[in-house]
Image 1 (cartoon, rainbow, N blue to C red):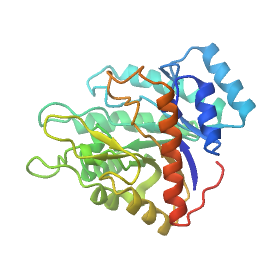
Image 2 (tube, one colour):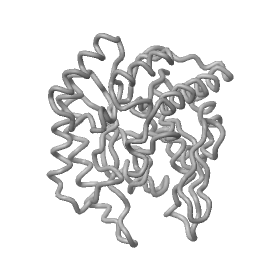
Image 3 (cartoon, helix red, strand yellow):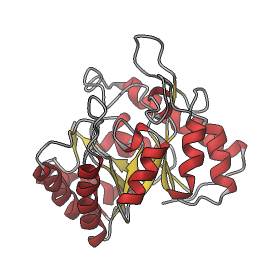
Image 4 (cartoon, one colour):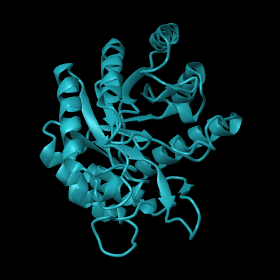
Length: 292
């Protein structure tokens, strides 16, 4: 098992992201944004600078947290938009040696009709292109079709051969379970237990059920309703040997436009503290991590 994280929550520039990673004693970043732009959208000069600084530091990119089919994209959007992101991502991932790419299944439609067959068709094409390039696509349970419930995730797996899963511990507490009657929050332990045999990668964040009329509330790992401690113990018992990536969302929430661009020294400090808290949880259960 190795540790990594969305270091753009520590700072916008690659220098700060590398610094935070090294301060934690880690050697991997799950790359998402550099200077406020997604890695498949930065200009060539910026990308070359990122490559050079990573090489000089010894820090590697283990996964690319792409924006492909994410919560900001509609399944009715022109599919060429998605395919363009795929084709821009592939050569950059190959250049960096990254083996995993985070994708989603488009945001939930308003109303009951979710157009699952169109989602599956698109994700089959996306998945086949990445696999042909030697890159493993991993789907995250977030504000997308697969994240509507564990049943939706399993349906996605059945219809998109080759795709694997990320489980994010902090997403379930603030998302509704659309497979159940009534207006109920997802239960993170139930979700995890139903899909755990398909998990290839893990995101650690923690959160609480939102209060009426308010947004989600994020916490340090193990202090929310995401079953972080229980899931870590279960992963260890099951012999999990993949990546565990921190995504604190304490100072920067990347699906909240109001929060983007508000990073400061506090962001850096919170990110490093979050990584240390996770390390302490792992040490408490005698689970040692290795370099990526």
